[in-house]
Image (cartoon, rainbow, N blue to C red):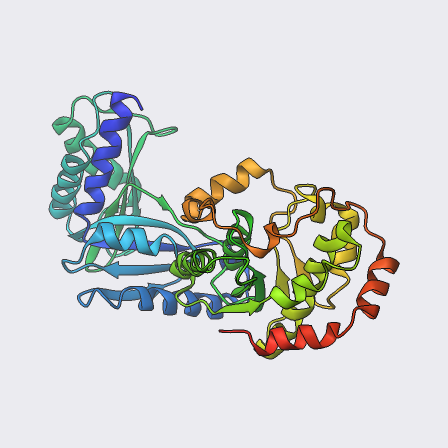
Length: 402
């Protein structure tokens, strides 16, 4: 980072610290006409949940925005929490002044002192007169604010087309909002506005990212994890609980279903079809998850499949495995590169947990050469002739811990 960029970043961090208010903007769902009101109410409800530990905060909402009046609460903590609310596109720390010219100029100067822009910074004032009774127009206000600021900061240069620093001034009745920064939120759709799905959550890198990506598209997610005690350790199970806890930072609450899979898994090991074990296991997981979905009122299953990544994720394998359920199979990562998935897992905070060396049931009993092109007719025949297969699946569902 160059010295100028470093100084600018530090200054903008201070602008968060000294904010009077946070301005939250809604994401892409604002385009959805009839659903808009429902979506905005959902985001507002999630924001209200998040600010409960901050008793002095006051919320207000208007078209496409939520205003968070801080009243002394920590702006930095609230920015960190609120930018992770699905449906929030951006967060701006705001200084508030009276809607009087002298006060607007004074607070704008104070704001610039906090940011402390480096000499040579390209600068622009963008004033907007929302309150039409205010005696000066928007274009006139640009000059009335910029002139004294430039006198106080002779190192700034005016650039109205591509400024590095754009001071935005919104003049409203009673108060004027002054801000310069849009901190990116996660965007997407408000959580739960597009229904509920079951996430197959392993201990790996991919499935938590698939869960986060699904929640970002407005899905409420319940996690299903298959464990094979004593072949998998208590640490492997705790790792998955911790991964679900990270996802709950974005969802508020997440339900986790822990399915004992040992009996089902070992039933495939003595039938002389080792190359099909992964296919049979994955199909059994889908059958169990489908029944849990019916019980929980979920309408789809989410997996962390990425095309071609492993034997069970070739197109022929995904075809045969997917036929074990009648529910839609959602694969958010199916066309993503592994490096992009890893980057996203680091951003959302699951990566360090995912790489802990505790095996899950998917890494046990893996044959030396699993098939990449299973035959559906053979797989159907194996499942139909496996002794007590349906009863094993039912027993696993009955013993599931939620």
